Amino acid sequence: MITQCPIRPGHNFTYRFNITGQQGTLWWHAHVASLRASVHGALIIRPRQGATSYPFPKHHREIPIIIGEWWETDLVQMAGNMTDGYFGFNPVAATLNGKLGDLYNCSGAMEEGYVLEVEPGKTYLLRFINAVLTSEHYLKIAGHKLTVVAADANYVNPYTTDTVAIAPGQTLDALLVADAPPRRSYYMVSMGSQPTIANPPPPVIVTRGTVQYRSSSSDDHEPAGNGVPLPSMVPDMPDLHDTATSFYFHGNLTSLHKSRVPTRVDEHLLIVLSAGSICRRGHRSCKRSGDMESNVLVTMNISFELPAAAAAAVTPLLESHYYHRNEPVYVTLPDRPQRAFNFTDHALIPFGPKEAALEPTGKATTARRFRHGMAWHGCGGGVPEHGRFAE
Image 1: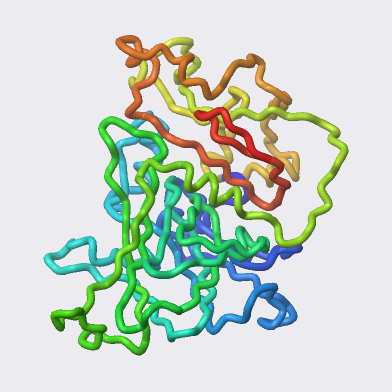
Image 2: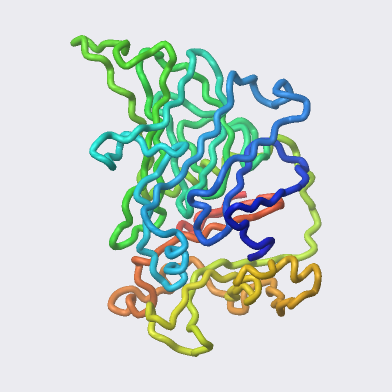
């Protein structure tokens, strides 16, 4: 383990930490194998001066909404199999606040969905948390717009949109104004995106809840012309493989307050994240996808492996470093890759009959970077496959 050994059944551990310069929504989750899929929760940081000091219009209520997944597999075994190169595990469904929604029929009856009750004309602060393992999610509420006011416990310039894109591990705070016709209900849909097209394709992971006005009921909907109650309104979702919506959404999130960005750069770093494989037991060559191969995520072509004591949950890595006990040998990362080339150019992969010998497209995946305990200044970004870069 990195920071501490796992909390044993029947035991407890008290965390003490400082909140510095952050207000909004964060979250906690387990760090053992993939147990964070089901062991997680919200951390809400409110202003010391009270609700009147929020830098956005006063809200009637605040509601955490956690996007999760429903798994029917052993999550510890799944984490081990991913190391062995098997990515065939997929969640059965997505959830909103633990509810599967009416798209699923698991026990012969329609599953219960999350219901958000609102009053006409009132404003609600929705605290979204994406607690899924790997997928970014698109979320929409039919007939409504959302005004994003914070991301990862940092205020942003209010950005109004009908679609939010929320990456795994990310949080978003958004205002919802209940200004739609109240005599019908509206679906809240969350769908996992798939940036790469795999073969065979993984299942579509989607769920939906309902925004229901308190003045409405199942038998009191506004009737259509033939007297039949209007059905719940369904939003039009982005395409499953749409990446532009996410790119432009995150590009529109800018800091509410001016930041003192350093104008003098002391060091220039080119950091490349990639996925690869190594042969076990020090072998120089091994059969791809065989028993002797392990898949790894690497930084600058350097992978990380826990020391034996930390891996066995005997002594955490940071504790060993602090007390100089069984301290492992650390490798200093270079400031740029040892070999430079166009890291995102698909033309460098010889397609056709030779493709299987290199990397089957069925393993196509995206690697997301988690940053713990710090904020940073984003100066620009781009879409590699289109060669675009925006400040």
